Length: 362
Ligand SMILES: Cc1ncc(COP(=O)(O)O)c(C=O)c1O
Image (cartoon, rainbow, N blue to C red; front, side, top):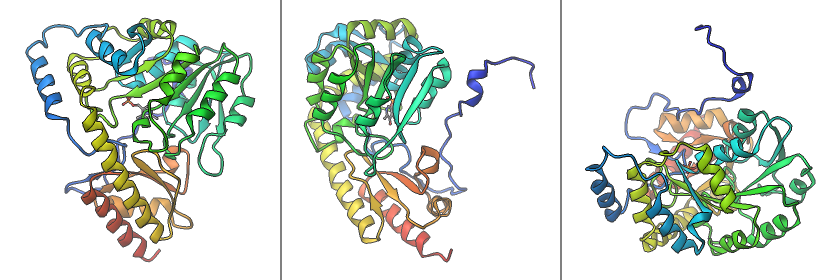
């Protein structure tokens, strides 16, 4: 005990857990964090290497080049684009800028583990709305929870951890029906992996709804989570609010250079999406053959219902074989596993470890 006093708000916020490795000391198959298994494109490595000589200088606080390239790619003015130290920083900045005691935030559950923090750290009230039976957002039920006190509604599309996605038209109608004082944060961390519709359809929604914020990241399909860069597309007021709240130099120079370069290689993005879709079909059909149900994934991971199998036992069995996935209990969905699609070798290792684990006597 140090005697230091902390605010009562933070006492309920859990520390993000490091992946449990179950004592396995060989090479791990890391399928727990929805990362991509591929390292950066050569041109991205070069862009990072070039920046190393200038690390005695602070990064550009406005991320001018990165925001210009994003503006070109998204066909929106740079004044409407904010960047952050991962999209998590923008979520936290949105909470700090918009939430306070007496305000409300509405989001589906289970959904991304960061959302509960937004209310917890600001003293706002969190209203959680259960997903429907297919693991999708129930937008009608969410709309019913909106009151004069609601400041933010978050829609995670595709949803983490269930991997399901809603059509953009449904989100369009949802936003159109909400009062203008409500900011809708459409978290599209995984949108590039969706084969249901053109991932860029939602950009048109940003042009039409001033209260909509689309949140995207370089952590997933661009494979840059180790550097931390994310961005939002919304009103210029929202961008300003993020810039006021976040640290001025939160997006480091290497991250800015890498992200700006990665945007120029959309052929690489398309290749990754295709390879992920192939692995998605492979893993999900193998799981179905084993009688294990998954939701309809539009992301780079799957949500597996374990039925009557014991989740903790399955987690341990996989972990002891060096396969690290996320437990549904940790993510608000007991009786499930969230498994990222890795390389074919990693995915087959997961399936073999699962077979061995399930064959063990209970
Ligand atoms: C739904 C969702 N949103 C946002 C993020 C945050 O990504 P980052 O802060 O790495 O950009 C994640 C990361 O896992 C996520 O799953």
